[in-house]
Amino acid sequence: MAVLVYAESLTGSIKKSALEAVTYGKLAADALGTECIALTIGKADGAASLGQYGASKVYNVSTADNNFDSQVYAAVVADAAQKLGADTVVFSHSSTGKSLAGRVAIRLEAGLVTSVLTAPTNGFEVKKGVFSGKGFATYSISSANRVVTIAPNTFRPNASGSDATVETLDVAVPAGRVKVTGQATVDGVVPLPEAELVVSAGRGMKGPENWGMIEEMATILGATTACSRPVADIDWRPHHEHVGQTGVAIRPNLYIAVGISGAIQHLAGVNQSKVIVVINKDPEAPFFKAADYGVVGDLFDVVPRLNEALKKFKANN
Amino acid sequence: MKLLVCVSQTPDTTTKVKFSADNTAFDTNGVQYIMNPYDEWYALVRALELKEQLGGSVTLFHVGPKENETVIRKGLAIGADSAVRVDAVASSATFVAKQVAAYAKAENFDVVFMGKETIDYNGSEVPALTAELLDMPFISYANNLKMEGNSATLSREIEGGKETMEVDTPFVVSCAKDMAEQRIPNMRGIMMAKRKPINVIAAVAAEDLATIVRYDYPPEKTGVKLIDPENMDELVNLLHNEAKVI
Image (cartoon, rainbow over all chains, first blue to last red; front, side):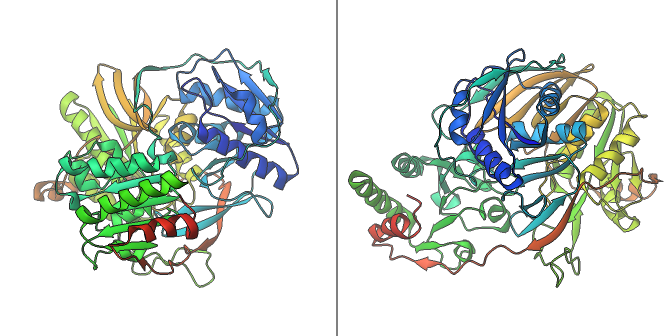
């Protein structure tokens, strides 16, 4: 019974999160002693490259369009799983994957675990973060079929092997009831949930006019910018940049926090970052307790100095 | 508009999380419970706003034992008209979704509201499970919802931006930040809530297909390494050579 990965391509081409999902699918397939196959829906440029990340075959349902309706897509994925003899279905833990996983789990009478951090072991046990990063829980799925979504930035895609052939899969596509009327994304920036490097700033910046040096740091590093809740609430920064309990939860490789004190609600959204750097003039700021590296100093001196050091580093590396 | 709002109870945000000695259960000793913030601030308040604008009713739905009625009373105090409590422990997302679907199927709700996730298990599972069981369209992570007749216009969070869509009732929506503003119950609401009905019903049978076998604590931070603010080359060097993240 194969592992089937739904590889997202809502914008018409395969997303980075889909490469991570296939990377996980291959790990799971190896653990379960089976093969990993990938499914794409609608236009999916780059689908053949999924072979390089571990998919032995790639299927495409070309009769569906790229307008996302969870009801339609769930029907397609569940039918494909049955047609292809898959008992494990893998999604990215994204706005798309999270909307689909539950629906597909019902259709396949499958146990569901979301945002998993490990390949299955011991039958089908997988680990995930709970209590907003304050603990981990290991779940065991007892049903014959299983559905999981995988945490972003956890399974690093490494291309090896060769392209897979893409076959058209004939699956009935039901009529949708949701009409997508528009999509607005910021171009040329890695979205926060997918970003490996994040530079974030808070009220210590004193005003939106001072954000130039934060943006400069992000540009030098190729990082995505984020902010704390108060800063988004007073409109110094756009709402989609807000990370924390009520905003976006992220787990980048590097999180640099500038002028953010580190309230528990903020930490809940960022405490799964691999490395945290805190720059704050208050040595008592709670954020230092959650940090790996800390700089106690005035951010208006420290950040320009750090930017110079980063530029020098980038010029030599 | 006949609106259903599903609310769950979660440990307070500031709870120090502890597990039982054998790490197989969440230690509830001394834990303060609150209504899941996404359910309260966004799902419930937006439903109340729509009722105020278009008329109709707002019913709360909760799966949990009698002691959880404090949370239900708060929802009634904020403005819901009545509540339904399934007298059972919410043992898994699938179990809860099956309770919602079993109740909602016969009641013809126009919109089923939920929060985008709970802040304890962060699963984000119940809304999609419920939508499929009810065979309804589902909009996740909605941050805006407007109704005109039986048509809704929504926007939702997607990675790095937003998506807008239209859908007719009935549908399921999971609510995120910006959907509405938190409301604090006033004294009149608290008094009125005492007289509002809570209809207690028995659970329908549903198997847990995924169960927790073990908990772990996150690895302890080894302590912050402080860097001289004059020496940012040192920080860059550590990020490159020690942490290996740049």
